[in-house]
Amino acid sequence: MKLWRPMIGKEKNTKGFTLIEMMIALTILALVVAAVAHALSQSLALAHRIKKETTLSLLAQSKMAELEAAGSNAVSGRGNFSGNFSQYSWQVTVRDSSIPSLKKVEVTVMDTLAEKSAGFHLSGFQCKDEKS
Image 1: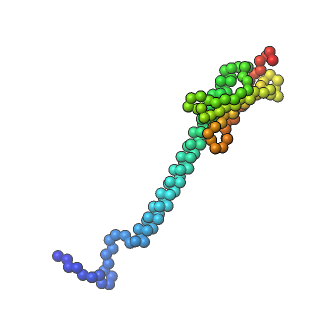
Image 2: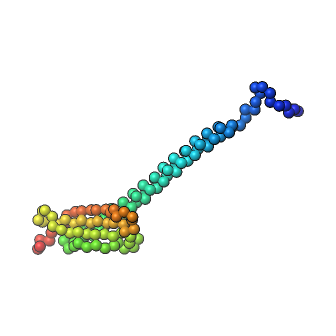
């Protein structure tokens, strides 16, 4: 059986951590958690921006394909997409180009709910109707 005796001289209990070691460990842990949280936040913001840009570009391509299917009957106009994309608006501008047999078709798609009015711009050329 061990008897209790006071610690005298160099005989110390070395088991466990000191308060300063715990404070240093918690500080390092807090810095790592803050860095990971910041990286996650940046990643989510970037994913949202990429999703929006992809949606804008696909809607612009869809509108351009619709105009190509209309052939030489494409005319300038504006409107909104329907269904799940009703927050997006489009604008089509058809004008003569510097080449007499071609007309320039420009499609711009914008998110009407976005704070910034940034959109996606797509342009192409179509052959003019030979009668005009």
